Length: 383
Image (cartoon, rainbow, N blue to C red):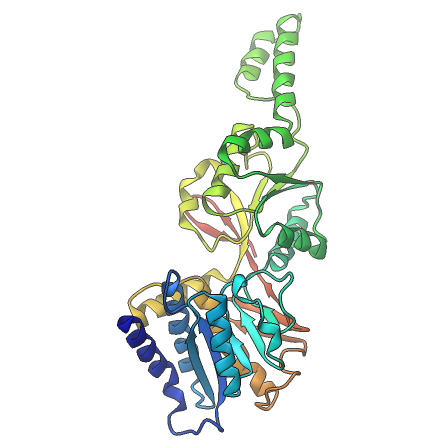
């Protein structure tokens, strides 16, 4: 406990640096809600450090960041918010996790810029700033139009973010031929993929065609049989692209099941959601090329490099969003003559951060994402 408290004090003093020489009345206080202790303390530490980078970049002593440890607990989050609220804080960065948003709507006039990417059923005073599904499907739709894709299969896992994906599909108006929900249990996955890709039918088509050729008097019969025997299936898949709404090992399992059913990226476009430039995808050569929307990679790499120079470690993915949030809040305050009121996050605005451009309208944020393809140990930018 003493180590945690010491760590918290040190970070607080560092972040408070720009408030020296000014009274609290002259400063605009911003609450920073992060898990500085417990299971997710490394995430909290990274978020605090990135907020320090953001404050140093702004270099304006009007802004005062007040970090508080939530321990990723809803009870602790509400306690820390209540304390800061009594001090006059009305702008909060955080909470980090969607599960800690419950009860925040009772803090009238306060705005919470949560790092969650979930936007459904959040309190009215919470703005989700994570890379939400709508932003990702907007970018995928743009890619669809570039590649003239209009027969897309969307594979959605039966996970807690299923409703977010459904909402994004509707709002983005993406072209969809079929939506299929799958169970992530490896013992069930392949059979489900077989079903949606009509694998058994295509397998039987091949057997029937081989038998037909064998019983025929066609010219070049042996050559035709040689070609057919090298195939796994016969017949059209029925899709020109597949969107796999999954991540990490589960994404790789789905891609492997598709390959097993003779559906490869050589035949149709493989697309996934934001993978945060996961380099383990380089090893999945059979599943390449696979494309995904994400933030600006060049800027992300520079941020990671700067972070490493400052703190001798690499940041958590949420850190770049925290850094941009500090800049966004400052930008909006400047636009609003440093008045903290209801207009601050209601006006339509565009902000260019290091993660890219994002739009703010009616207390909602959408990111204008870039698009990348994984191929031959590289992330190749499409747009």
